[in-house]
Length: 443
Image (cartoon, rainbow, N blue to C red):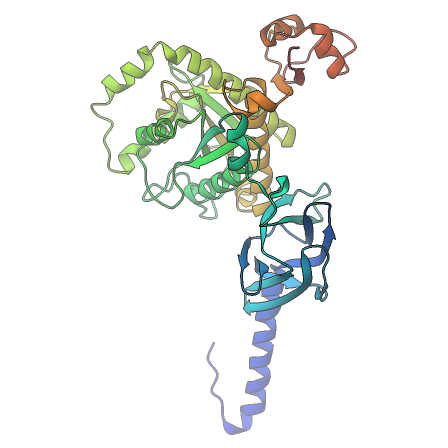
């Protein structure tokens, strides 16, 4: 719209400008993350800051010296009330500012330099989100400020999870009705999953791609092998001609082809991504044959099945699954001969409702959390020898598969049926398929 403004219209013009900026400001605030409160508490050997927010924040934490400060930047952040005030413990005072129009800054003035460790606490009622920051004095080593990387090597190495964000670069993947590209959703989900895994003791994540680039499918699992990964997880968003199709799915490799027509179509669609990226699949038959003929593949597939069952069980607890069993398909990206591999379809991008969810940061966080819990259950149930988890985890998890009995599960883990019944408060030896059992370590 264009206005012809005369001298006599100057007052009207100023009013229109004011109204325009008021509307813009209101729209910006509507999508802002509101900081509701900031609390500081002094513990025995560290200081904890608790920030309550309206939404899952997009935030950054860093420290500054001379004087010592800890800074929290919340993108698109806003304040409900003033948070300026005195601190406790290592924090002398708290203040806030707005260095940029779309960034709220919270500054903790410190008594001395600190090492911070932060994590998000998922709200049970989804109405409150909480950012926790633990601070320990840099001059005093303390457990809350130590990273997993520092702790794990003491009793064993970390398990490494290679996370592959599907598609990328000039391969957009599936495209939703609103124009959402699968490659964008999968990268955001993979990054969230990596962050969550890195918060778990004894686990470390490696991203196969951390930007919008194309990587050939065989190269993806080769990168996982180069990182000596204990598990490879490929993140995707499903698509189907039926726009009502919904729910998450978990796949593992099938050397005999797809388990059904839908899975076969999906595998062919994903495999064609190589051609989109300009890399021909011609001449790869010998490599594939070597992978399929490798004797280690049998053990790898068994571990893949176990990991996939745990992840599917966790996703099912979070919400509706497309299929209540692990599907098998001949995905190129899952053909690693010695790294257990699975592919997670986080939802149907072809379904308008699920496309909307996949674009929602809160939903992506919940899915990433569910996948992480499944991965954690898998490693706790079958920790690789020599790892921190094998040395430290006392209670492991087992997802009951079809046809398994309690005595078979007890025998596999080397514990008595009585112990399993006791720790799980079972009144009989009957177990339900898909149930997650706590398995005590053998004594």
